Length: 493
Image 1: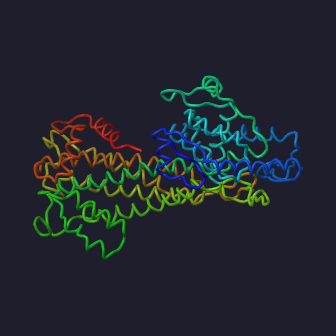
Image 2: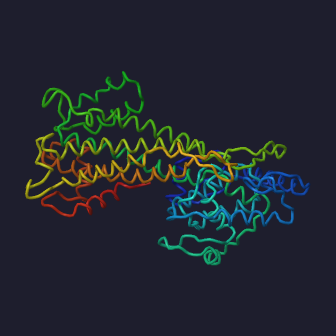
Image 3: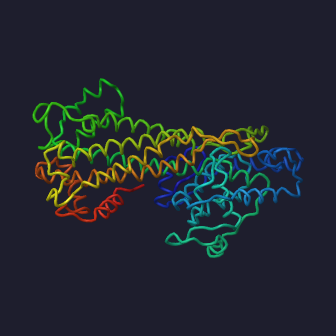
């Protein structure tokens, strides 16, 4: 069980709750902060003080004062009107992550919600009731308003949730089956549920977890390619990388040398040729730079998952209430754009290695790794597919964060587009996994021509594992099925 404090949640704990489906609990000290924060809101309402989001309208309508008798209707109207997302829903994993992240933000005690609402969010997580949340519609500035409104809709017993096997069911029906009582929102609570970056961060965390595995996979696949092309190990000498000084580059080179241990296919400088092409020789430099970006992304995500992103914030034990802009997604928007570029580059260099594996002008292997070149095309069109995916990535890697469009009658006149960036990053990750899958299929074939008995033991272990998934190319077949099957094997949170 993962205990939420509001300030200590990690990427790994998010994975445990959202992928491994572990339960959560809330630390007692945090619940005391929630109660104190709520008392401050109740006092504001009782004293008829005018405070944004508690007894005023929202956005451009913030100057409209709301009577105390209408405060509950104000919150209900807010949720219903903002629940206008469109498109395919986020996955259940992302939906669960959004619940978790919003709950973690609320238990910091700066949002003024009732303990009852906090407990309901925890129940949804522990009873595995996950809202159906459309992916499109967030500007990523005044919070992920539309996606989070679909989360809040479920709390009031409306909208839809996921059932078994991903079927979509009405919230009302599932609440009845699981004996969950919906909540009637009170002052500040609707706004507290939707002011935040939890959609882009939820997608961002899952993106990071997938990319971390993808980056490690790209290394052993590249090592197998090196064996298939009788690559030169000298470029991975530790001194080469130490004199440049990047820790991530040094680490990639070290891991590659570990993969090469015991190999009789890897060559030395001058044995076959003096130097390799950049896609082989510069693996530590290029992959290492992507790891630098990943480290940056993880740092920003772990700050944001423990951040207070509500507005207004109830500070100094309720003595200070400030309307600010912590809901603005710019830090995560930039991180997601950086992630897009980093992952796209792993695909770029992988596709170039695919070309070196299949092009008879660049190696001494059978043309296109075909058993009967000319009569059969072999891996020729697999390289086309990799090139297509790489080109698609290039368009998706254009930074979403450099765009902005005003909303709410120009009150919200600069927005982050962070959720768009996170969604595009997910597509790039999936595309890149297929590119390295194609490289893996070609590398499996190349080393078999060279002699599996000459492979490094660690790489041969990977060869044996994945040869069981994709058989040898003995004749042309529908390679789409091989690519999808192996890509699914490589996919993992």
